[in-house]
Image 1 (tube, rainbow, N blue to C red):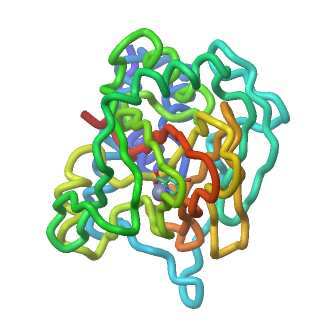
Image 2: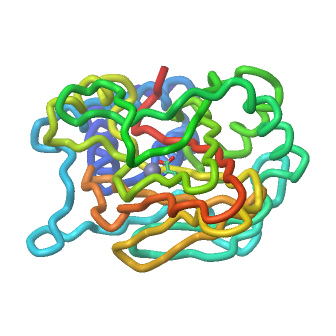
Length: 286
Ligand code: PD2
Ligand code: ZN
């Protein structure tokens, strides 16, 4: 059996530094004759080591001095992507910020089932206070939500496998799914989904799983009016259509964070809005 010698250590750290995905590195090692389990352990150690290095602290890129470098997105190319058990259509791709809009990630029946099972379990949504790390209820986020544990039941597990395949990101690096409901006039003002790297309250949230690297928002109903997901830095808005989704990635392989990933949920002008959110982390979470 092959061993991870100095040459392979060098290969691991240089590939982590240039932004390769863990999956591609594991595949390459298996092809070179490593056992799958050994390759996974070596690659995960390389990522842990890299992000623990103080020189590799995550930081929000500064457009004037150190602009965010858009490395390759893990999402596959093409107009139709096979995501585990379902073909998902690509409607739009944007390079800056790195964003993909999908149609029909979920079936209408799956959307309806998620709404029905969440309706009676909703709690008022919170946001992370960057100073304290506490979850606070604030006026800028007027929604109610419910969290589902990873693999909680067959439906959740099936959707998570689909998301893993579509985003090309390990299932174990994902937070649980969250279903959110906004009533008419509900909104979520523009914010970043990553934890502010320079704020003391972030450490408690990044201690497990590291930084958030990307978000997938799935729309569970057609919103009658308003409720788009907006990206004000680039003037883009994504309309809510049942089963559709928007994926956006804001941390690259160098641990830079993209300030153009600023986004919000526009006020719902008529009807209500249901979404499901999946946040993806650098490393295994939970
Ligand atoms: O509801 C939305 O469209 C929305 C907008 C921005 C949701 C989130 N962020 C989120 O859940 O992070
Ligand atoms: Zn958000």
